[in-house]
Image (cartoon, rainbow, N blue to C red):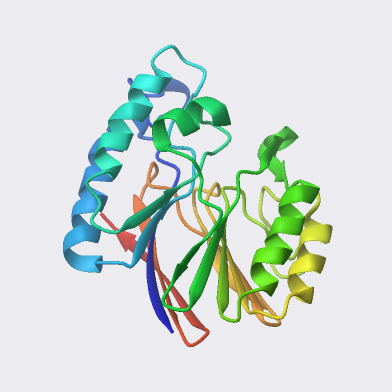
Length: 236
């Protein structure tokens, strides 16, 4: 079992500089994305690339769908398989899906199962997972014998191991169900622009990739080999 995942997240694409958040270079997002894709295609050569949300800075603006279409054209130049998730700054799921495509139930590659989630936005830029998706998480994990990777926008972390700005409003329930699974799992998220280091709780690992929109303008490469997981940040 060996798998290489390229992780891009939090582009915050905007049509003009963000005067109130000048360090967030959303106006350069597509340029950064194309540079990242060039590195991924020619150097990283992953088995799959995942884009973990907040492709746009404001999904409610009049030009939001046009900006999203531009990013979709760039994403289409990736040589690897691709999964794209919506973030809390993106257009509503229905509009996002029209451009980025339907979210797959799961993907199996090289003995690893990747399960993406379109979780509900909650106050304070947090999230929650529905009972339906918790049941789906457990079912799709339990009927697979290998490593599981959960893909989501908002990080999930055991609070006793690391503290972030954001989490799930039903984090305790999610962590309880994940701990009960027979498989080793990796919860892979974005949202925290500085990223969050990988922590382990028993057989389970949790990490948040850095955002592409803020210095030092990074993406992440995750390598899984016989349950050994390495997460490496890459600079443009």
